[in-house]
Length: 331
Image 1 (cartoon, helix red, strand yellow):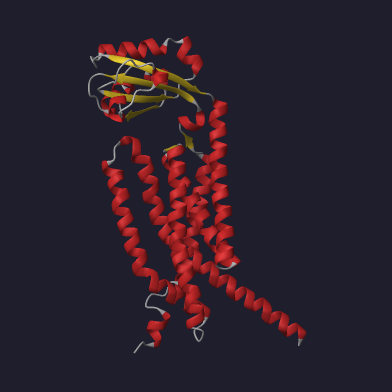
Image 2 (cartoon, helix red, strand yellow):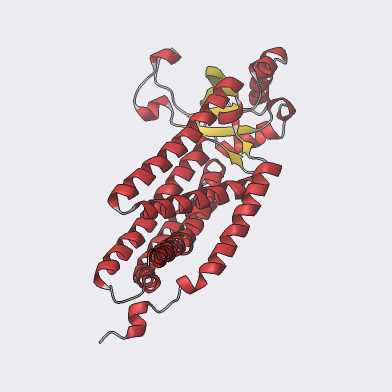
């Protein structure tokens, strides 16, 4: 037989509502402060720069090429350097005509992103210096496939499109949850998503981690993860509102959170196992993406329990108080 205590839920989430508001408020204020005072460290995708694509006959690692450039005199001209290994044409089983290759290549290929502008590359003879560095380090035979430049205008355009993508995603979520549940549920879910996004970006501003297109992809993934958790809880609240009508609204919400707790913990733990593996074992290129995901899982799990539900409870009782005042005035 289910006891009255069990119906209300073993852990009093709603009773910790003020504490949750306090923690979230402090975290958001610190994050906004960091964003305004320290600013985001935009990567090459958003600031512009140069891209080199080289093929090496020898099998090299990203770390070896990155370390070679960063320890050379070119570091001052290149600024921030991102080295990414890509599949060689032979690995892909094709030959690109635009690269004008006469035969399938072997070895390895690297795409090197730098902050150096077109003017710096051409005026300072940076490209010949880079190739001379490769020869002096005995990296073996190599060939340049292409060189491209991303101007500041293109970088600003990418930044605007990334922000637009986030805005469209949030508006779409607001519309979907309004139709699927209620408008107040949509507002609570969107508040949680904004809460998560601001805190993740605030932490990146404090740490001065690079923000690029990969981080924006991580942010959209975090929004999806947090939303999924919130919808599960919202659906449970709606079900208990129908089945547990004798309980007060805050007790129904608290019961729903307790019923979803095991599922929330299991989902968070299994997700963290994957993203922390990428964080510690995935290498330099994917490290910041994995860091954003790790922070996002923690913050998203927290907001599903201590942001969405308290907003619903506060809204519910505020509306009932307003209705009671109206009735009293009519009488």
